[in-house]
Amino acid sequence: MAVGIGIGRFVYTPILPPMLAALGLSKTAAGFIASANFAGYLVGALGASRAALPGSRRGWLVGALIASGVTTAAMGFCGSVAGFMLLRFMGGVASALVLILASALVLDRLAQAQRPGLASLHFAGVGLGITLSAAIVAALLAGGLSWDRMWQACGGLSLIGAGLVWRLLPASEPMAAPAVPGGAAPRDPRLRRMTIAYGLFGFGYVITATFLVAIVRATPAVQALEPIIWIVVGLAAAPSVMVWTFLGRRFGLSTAFALAALTEAAGVLASVLRPDSAGICVAAVLVGGTFMGLTALGLMLGRSLARGDPRRVMAAMTGAFGVGQIVGPLVAGVASDAFGGFAVPSIAAAAALVLAAWLAHRSGSAMT
Image (cartoon, rainbow, N blue to C red):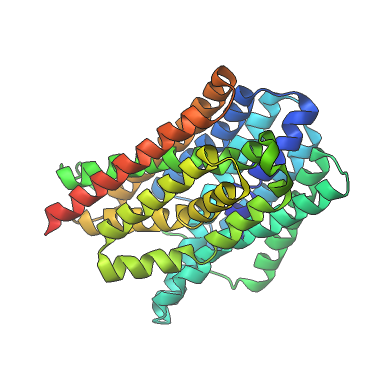
């Protein structure tokens, strides 16, 4: 998870500002590059949940980790927007495969060992990867190295991680072809509301998650925070799944999802409405401390509302989330170039998160 998601999916954020400055790219181009990664993630997630993949899960997982490392390093040898988009798309496919296959392997082993509570440690890998890659980028930035060296260094770290997984992960059984659920998903209004809420969450978090470091660099009062702000996000993300799943068990999944969405909305707003050190740090903690928790809570809610085989519901929610992720950076990039900053798209993102909270609350209320 640290390699495929924490680095492969999110290292773009801390490298983006020096990359934009060196290449003279517009925010619109940056949004297209980010959206290409999320489009690849959507394709990979839906494909892995439906297609029959020959061979073992271990083999596919290690292959996806290697692909993630190679495409990350290759960004440092590329110089065109089209090339960046292609590499990020392929990296997105690899990230999705890592998430699905690693989670299947780990969660299956934990279920066999009757230790499901340790699943939060698995998801903490995302925060670990964000923190490690942010620290590397900060060190290289302080040393005066260029954006391409940052991509190459993080890709090299990913390949080392892939090697460790290959050595440590025991052989696994061949993958069975996923059963194709018959018929359409139940037309339950609660599921429709949660699917829409999950898509709004995808749109709401991804603008800040993609452009936070760029916002810091563009704000003179907080430019000194650029080397560390993404590290703060990673540190906040590491324990977040454990915290939010605990709150889900304590207060109900829908209530926890709504609270997390409102908390994240506050963080998104803080990133643009409080252009000082306190506001940016609050944004990093609140967004970093909620996006993985919301991911877990949303899927848990969808699973609890599904009737029969839940995979069609999971696919629908993943699709909605993916569309939100793809649209978010595009809207943010175009709006930033048009309005001279990220305030307008960030306010729209916060509004989407508030609406997601309301829809999730309604879905939970309908269950009682």
